[in-house]
Image (tube, rainbow, N blue to C red; front, side, top):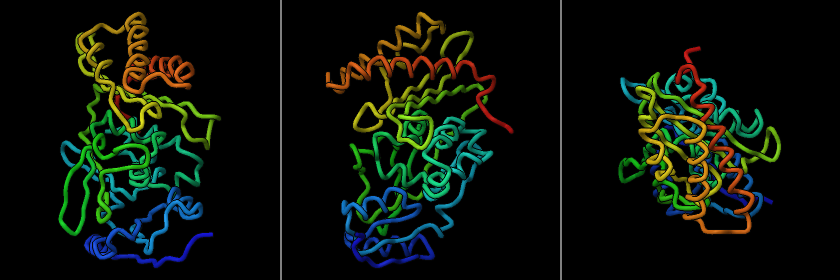
Length: 292
């Protein structure tokens, strides 16, 4: 049974920030509610106040300037997947969120909720890491920027203070030269939480890998880039032998950072296979942007 609570629908971001400040840690933000409602039903969270931010325009926009793409925290997964701007300049994120849950979940769930819930299996986090995305956080005290990589502290834990709201996220637009690949492994084809995933963005120059970013999902308590693997691949000519060696480095890095666990014998070959599929998919892209 869901415990009783007050419910407010602020008309401005300032009003929402004021409500959070006055609640002194006893309030929760709700947008899509796909994670929060489960927590309420299970008794995992018992707020005195729910603050519904779905009507705040600042949180519902997808905007661009000359170099940057910005996505409001209350934009739904479906809206991101359907956005021409996101498909042009952040195709890997569009691909990832299009595979989240069911159509009903994608229509309700928001990108901000997916981030702030901080599940190690969140499909949006590896793409956001390789996009070098930054979260813009607002509160009664003002506004600050936090890289998505630093926003998540651990499973279901963020650096957000109780009175802060994630307003939007932004990242530098990917150029046409950038290629990307996202692969997820779930219990079944759809409507399942990802068991593991892999996000890769790369750029070639004169037949060599000039730049590459790699981030796996669900293998670390918090999202991380595989800098060791990126450094190994940078400057090299891509071929299957190189990728096979790099895939071993992926599993070695996983073990080095997390240690050997009961699941390691299963995860190591799977994460290697996901890396190989993701990097092959990246190289197979004819154009790093989707202009349709």
